[in-house]
Each structure stands twice: as structure tokens, then as C-alpha cells.
Image (cartoon, rainbow, N blue to C red; front, side):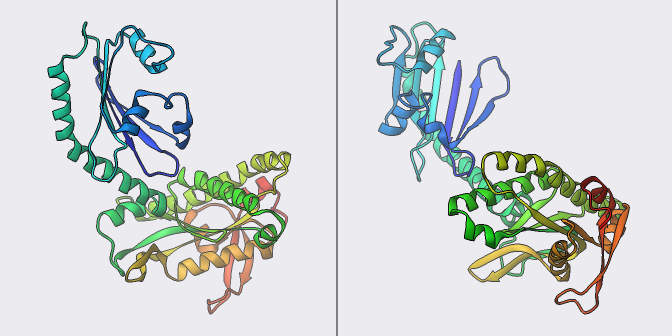
Amino acid sequence: MRLVMTFRTLHPQFSAERVLWERGKGMTSHRRSDHNIWSTDAYRGSPIETIVTTGKSYHRRLTNLDPDRDHQVLFDLAKAGVTDYYGQIIPFTFHRQSTFLVNTDVPGGFTESDLAKFDRLVKHLGPIVEVLVTHSIAVGLLDTYLGPRTGRKVFAGLIKRGDGEEIDAALWFSDLREFTHLTETYAADDVLDLLNAYFEHVHTAVTAYGGEILRFIGDAMLIVFPVQEGKDPAKARRDACRAALDAAVDAFSSLAVMNSLRRRDGKPEIRFGVGLHFGHVVYGNVGAPGRLDFTVMGPAVNRTSRMESLTKELGIPLILSEEMGRIADVPVTPRGKHAMKGVAEPQSVVSYTAFDEEFGFATR
């Protein structure tokens, strides 16, 4: 009637995964559980906890259930028509945290022959399932620490120093305001909370528009919006630039609400600046032979960082290069030419007119 497999995983948001097949439902369903699952009543005292803790099989016919001995999940299954419950550890080489659970509604439940067959089936499934789970964990970790786009490239084999490609992309560099003051003024937990809130806030905004965080540099973030291949080149460049601009506007639009809630809770406000530029960069591995970083490199990255520095000087939290504004083909406001460290000639910068008008920077 039902077959369930559960797996422990390695992910910052999820602790376990479950795959469920039910007769008559067609497709299997997939569910992830957060790290609090192990302290909930749904897990404590459950058949799954018993299987995982003892490493032994669990068999219970769902007749004459005892409220003082049997877990609520068994009562729920019996109410749904289940007559017998059997569970077994899936034998993995690296841990015993995966389970195989099967239920039936056949009167009288499973026979001894049925259980023996399930045991043999689990032994055959174990190596196959372990490969799939290990693959899922590897992809999840690469997505978490490198980002989905970069993680896929590394998983596909771009793993040697110097491996990479040249791409055109809109680049984003953002930095927190007065971070040194915050670290000197607030407790470490409060600073960590602020950093995580800021990173999550920006991540939510940029990923909605196809951006990917490449690096956290202290309190700064380097983000890339690659030009999509297969499109008209001019349109693809414009789309990448507009995606970065729209993400920035969204990030600042929702910031006021978040800061209002932080003030109410007595927490420091989050303030940051964003510099945007468009350029040709090398997207690949750099570092020592045994310790690499997958990032973007080139003069465009340096200029993007300088754009962000100008947000402090000009008092406008969003500044972009003249080239970025031209490619995006949106109304911009000239903000003069400015010397930039490492750049021979002063560079023209602009601000996004729609942003200036919405947030009151049009007269600056």
C-alpha cells in the first residue's frame, strides 16, 4: 500500500529527505525536513527512530495498538487502512541513517516470506540508493558553497587550476555600511545575525533575476549575472544588465520593511551600497594547486568594486558604470568622472534614474 525511503543528508537547511510511493497515487512524492525534525514528537519514539537507533528491523501488526507503547504514526496509518508495518535499515557503507519502510492493507498483514523478500530487496537496493544519495549530497554541497551554476561546472570536471572560460556578465559588488563600527559596538552574535540577514536579503533578490553569488568577502558580496547564450547578443547583454538593476531595486525596496522590523526588535539596521558594471571576465579556478576558488577575474571585477566605493562618496547607494547604463538602455543620471584605484583614466559613472526618483536621490 505504501513504500517510504528516508535519508539523512548534508545541507544547511535540510537534515533529511523522504521519498513516498502510495498505491493509486501515480508519481512518488518527495519531502525535505529541517534540522529540528529530530526533536519533534513526529520523530521521537517513532518506528524510524527505533530503526535508526538500534540498526535492527521493526515489525508491527497494526492491531491492538497500545497508546502507552505505540507511536501516533501507527494509529494514523491504522486509521488509513494499514494492517502491517515493516521497516529496515538501508545498508550504506558510510552511515546507517537511511531506512526502507513498507506498509500493507492486506488482511492478516505480511507473511514471513514477504519479510524475507523485503530484506533481500533492501540488500540489493542499498548500493544503488547509496550512489544516488551520495550524488544528491555532493550536488547540494556544491550548490551551497559555490552556487548552482558554478557547482555544476565543477561537478562536470572544471577542477584544475586554470580551468575556466571567458564570459560577458553584469557584475554586482555590495558592501555593508559601517561594518567595523558594528563589530566594535555589538556582540558577536548580533553581528553574525546582521550579516546573515543581509546575505539572505541580497541572495533572495538576486537569485530571483538569475544572479549567482560567487564570493562572500567579509561583509562584501561579488555576484554575477551571466549573459545567456543562444540569444541575440545585444538583447542578451541588455537582459543581464536589466536583471542586475531590477534585483538591486528589489533589494532596496524591501530593505525598509526589514529595517523597520529590526528597529522594533532593538537590532541594528542594515545599510549597504551596490556597484554595478558590465564586462568581459574569466570565470574559473584560481588559487594554490590543492586549494582553489572558482570566481571571476579581470579588470571589470576591479571596476565593479570601485563603483561600490563611490556609493559612499556620492551618497547614493546604487551606482553603475556609464557602460552598464548604456547597455541596459535605461534612463540614467550622470554623476561625473571619478578616479579609480588601479584604473589609468577617470571613469564616468551614472545612477539609475528610476531608482533615484523612487528613493529620493534625484536631486543629489
